[in-house]
Image 1 (cartoon, rainbow over the protein chains, first blue to last red):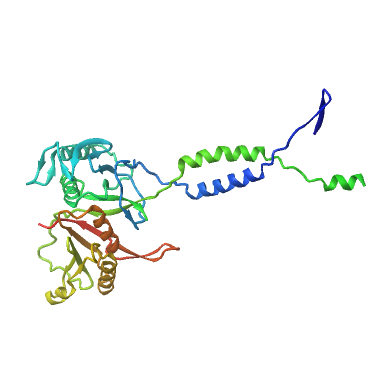
Image 2 (image 1 turned 90 degrees about the vertical axis):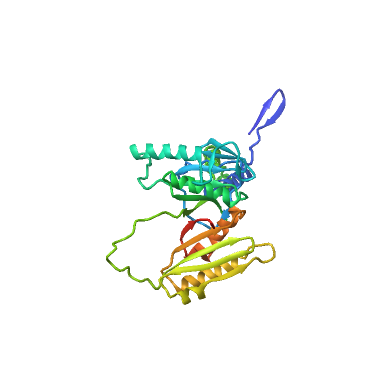
Amino acid sequence: MISKSRGRTIESVNLNLTSMMDMFTIILVFLIFSFSSQDQNLRLDPDLTLPESIAAIEFKWAINVNATPTELRVEGNTVSKIKGGVFTDVKVDMDKKRVVPLYNLLKKFKDIEDREKVNPTGDETVIAFQADKNLPFETIDLIMKTAAQAGYPNFRFVVLKK
Amino acid sequence: MAGKREAEKPVDLNMVPIMNLFLAMIPFLLMCAAFFQVSVINASVPALSEGGDEGSEPKKELQKITLQLQITDSGFTISASGDQSPDELKNLAGTIPKKGNQYDFEKLAERAKALHDKYPKSDTVIFLPAKGVLYETLVQAMDATRERIVDKKLDRREFLFTNAIVSSIL
């Protein structure tokens, strides 16, 4: 469209949106492919590096226990500090193989679970265990044995898909 | 003549509504996008179970073994338990030493496949890592014994020892 104003000719410019549309289409297709509809109450801990695995089982409802190189957390709350794979500021009963505060907390969870129906899936509650890939096995073992004694012998190791 | 010229004139599509739609969809999809995918491995710790009927003789299961895998500084040590004769079980045992500084997961996967082919009803493996073995090594050993990817494109898998129990060497 050409219009005249004070003797000067003003031409309205039509923007060519084709290249932008192309870009948006590519972004949209990429995002649709990476869209995840998984039901996840899982909060990945930024302080730890998960190991990679070829496992393809989807995540389900569970109690989150995270072992980072520096802390042990249950549902995001710090239970103990860890230094070099050793629990530093809490009582560890080596005879019974249990981290005492972790045992007490999980036992409380178990009692509540037994009283009220907490697990929405109705299955036996398991522990979703996120641990740093460089933690030594004795730390992992102690956490697993503690949880098992508190009534949670089944675990789901959270891993990154290869 | 004038009518022909008008017919040849290219039509400009109104892209604005499509652009609006794209602009609304992209932030939503960005929020829901999973740039890394999380998966899980089922595992359990050994538990005491109540014995069955004492009067009845348990049925022998000759197509089934329970694999035991020790992970030590020197490599893997495999042994098996089951209803087979002690000699047969002894023949299944073996070691897979480290390849240089690395654990030989390929050989472990081959051995697990061979054992599962021989005893196809087997599904249980007990991991016995030594002190100091890294969690990553345990996960990789679990991968090697649990399943084999037959076709990566079609995601076809052959399942081996799917029931993983994690214990420790006393």
